[in-house]
Length: 327
Length: 117
Image (cartoon, rainbow over all chains, first blue to last red; front, side, top):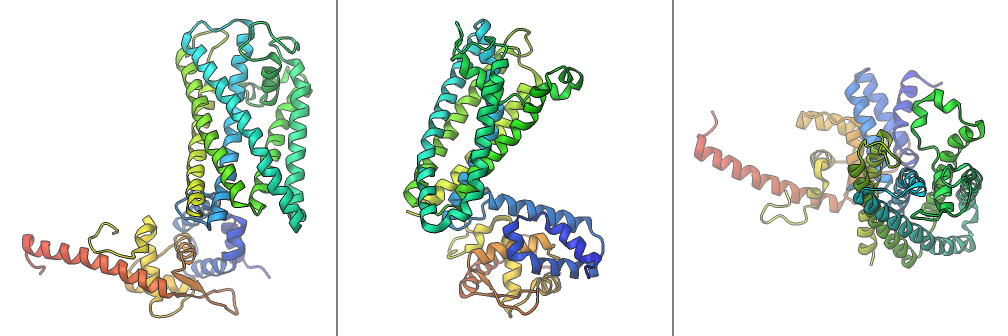
């Protein structure tokens, strides 16, 4: 029969990641039960366990000074960097596509806004190229893993990634036709980027919106669009979870792992340029009304992007250290 | 402690804020294997410090990862740990460093402030 102490210990144990629980769960539970018998209530103990659990999760993500075994450290670091890049792009592309929409109507008057927008566009192009380049090594490592009997382990994350990508691409393609920039025409007359690209990016990141804070205005949207705003983040999460799950389960050849680590490092540089461009625009436009007005959500987006960039840089740095240490 | 002249093989110096708990755990295991709760009680008895469960297991997992301690098989859910040869070397190096610092501090105190009453 499960005692109250067992249940309390099981609750506290949930702070820790699954792999940690599999290794230390039983003995940690015994320790907690002995502690409960001696001191039934202690908020300091609960806080210490929560802190330990979060640290164990950060360690599993390759973000703490507690080094994992080299291949696992590289895989964990790369997976965390990919998650950070996805979060960065979700907010960054939402911001960038909004500016691209504005430029379809009229170019910005402030030079700093133009410079910022060009920097963001160049960085977005670089990131897109790096993501395309990252696919072949992942595909080769996956095919190699499948051929070596890992198909069962890889099937789940691969299906999740494909499902997420298909939903995100199909949904974005469908909703880009409702884009206000060109009325659905694929090419604009005076945009910095092709209208179709801006429209697709706008539709893919429709969920990053200040309308969530204004339910009355949001309710006036077509129901299908509101549904897409709710579904698209889930599709992105599925895509990222699938890709990172695959990356972490693969037995990577060192050369391919090194190649992916290089691409992720280059992506961190691209994110830095993108962020600098975004800051340039917000500082130049401030709260000035007009097509390129920067709102509270843009400032909040920049804060999220800064956090994502710092996590990506830390994860990439630790992954690189392990890659170099392994050679 | 890594900056102390003459320090060598001080693995614990790389543990940062966990160097303290790690030293206490290794010192406790120096006289024989112990499981988590026994470690907590022993450390409390000889150092007057109560290691909280999260802190204890964070340090244990780091020490195990570095090969300074190892887990022993157990019939029940309480798994005992014991010091490895590498752990004994690291503990000795770390305590030597600490003793050097303590000696310098005590010598300077005695010169500037007199002997303790």
